[in-house]
Length: 314
View (tube, rainbow, N blue to C red):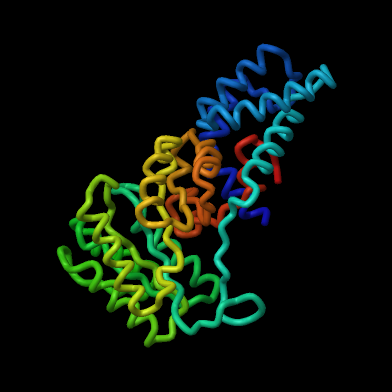
């Protein structure tokens, strides 16, 4: 658990840094005062926590300050983390890993995860990292290279598959993505694998032909299993911050999303946007991308996130 928290701490270092700079190291231990509260408000907005969350955090810190004028910055950080924990309640998405045991669905059919999103969000890389992560949990996985639209996307996933020793079903650029999905499901079923992860083409929600391709992939998978794809996750570039909310809303309306993966958080100071995305959409966050290595894709943890962004230890 400590090792996992260290990943969150490192992954959100830029968000912590911008808050520390704006507040002149308030959470390091000095006392709260009116000026530092103004600085903290600006810092929370800069980190993209949004109006509602920033207001809640400040209101609770101000209430504590009125009760105790000697309130220290670390105590304020603890209050902030407690507010985030409350606001994010229910946001942790969890896969039921395993194929036997209590509350685990029997592996009559593979569990299908469709990865969806715009170009550049990190879908292909995340597909490979997720497959690797499931393998570490002793799950058997096949990845399907259904991004046949983008030049070199198939080769990119093949390269990851070679590097991480993943099973892959692929065709060529320009191939029918739904046909690849059909073949991949059959292979996953016939080989008795637990999971099929489908990498789809990046698309703007305004591109009707690509949105229709998504619907076709879903129809083809449903012919094999009416429940497939059981998971439909939008891969969101964390550096976009709250600007990704409208994008996610439209994808949700058109495809019925079941969850989110937020990537590239280590490269942005806008780590607070996770809260706004959850508040707006109430879609569970399954994984977060905290770095470039396969092990840097980690299950989202409210506790680790809330403590990391406020510079606390877990």
